[in-house]
Amino acid sequence: MGLEEIPRKVSLKKANPAKAAILSLGKAFPHQLVMQEFLVDGYFRNTNCDDPDLKQKLTRLCKSTTVKTRYVVMSEEILKKYPELAVEGLPTVKQRLDICNKAVTQMAIEASRACIDKWGRPIEDITHVVYVSSSEARLPGGDLYLASGLGLNPETHRVMLYFVGCSGGVAGLRVAKDIAENNPGSRVLLATSETTIIGFKPPSVDRPYDLVGVALFGDGAGAMIIGSGPFLDHERPLFELHTAIQKFLPGTEKTIDGRLTEEGISFKLGRELPQVIEDHIEGFCDKLIGIIGFSDKEYNKLFWAVHPGGPAILNRLEKRLDLTPDKLNASRRALMDYGNASSNTIVYVLEYMLEESLKMKKEGQQETEWGLILAFGPGVTFEGILARNITV
Image 1: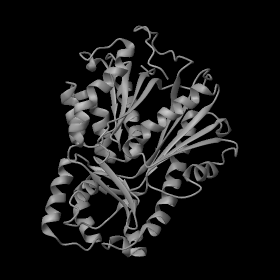
Image 2: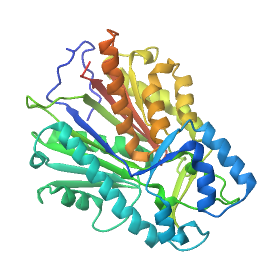
Image 3: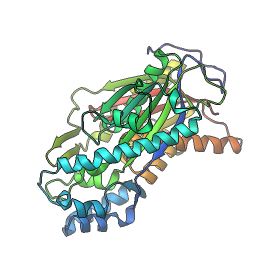
Image 4: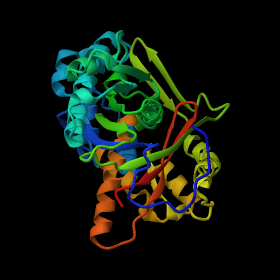
């Protein structure tokens, strides 16, 4: 979609029928809840490691991530069945995929059902599926297993985004927006599902960066229904998706580096990632907010739904854009409650944003209509959507 300019003053609460909107949100999690304060002892016990230096390093990281709780697929039962997952250097990709493929499908189905129930229309009205995951690999893909598990019409059109990482949720939303706006009357189910089992490894002095993932990442699934007008009477548009853009930063391909190996996925996050994002965030955001006549001095007049890749990224963004602390509250809450759940996390951020918007309305506070939905992933790739909260 082009970056066409629109009048700055538009009517509140009325959705533009030509623009796609998020009509419903849903989420699901595995049953295993991990409290951050108990993670270190459990992880080192399950991997039979007693290195005090690595344990101390992970303890520090767990405190710095600001994560309090996370959901994970991994369990003692899985490790008893597959003890090789906790052994360094063994070829375990088959076992990992057997677990992951089943787990992500189940979570995606549960999140989608929750989303469809909130939407209120029959499942037969879903015309398209966009499925996002960096936690599975198979043919046919998870999009088909999701559609089959939900009992969707076999003629439902499917799109699958694999290994897009943390930007996958917003990338999927961009694709769903384009589908909805170019297929009148369509209703798109966007589902994301992730598990860290694909990359679970014992601690190693040769891979100290793995401990960042242990301290930060979580599992779960998210879902959204996206459609454009006309909206039926019982449909309740939440966020209007005005303009979506994407940009990759040349020369940063190794900053977020992932490889699918015989031992599963190996990730390496460059220490420079927060700085890379900080250096390029203003120009990226200005391109979007300029469409509605906002300048770079008016960042605090917007809402900010930012994928919480980690506290360092949120802190850098907040400082560079001179945001008031409340602007990233939804992102920080999602990180605290669920960890960085990769592509799913933007769903949790948007849910918290709606919750805070409702609270502000009840308290008679002025709510923010326009804002940005942002995520950063491998590439380094920036995904951004200029959106309008039409519940305010």
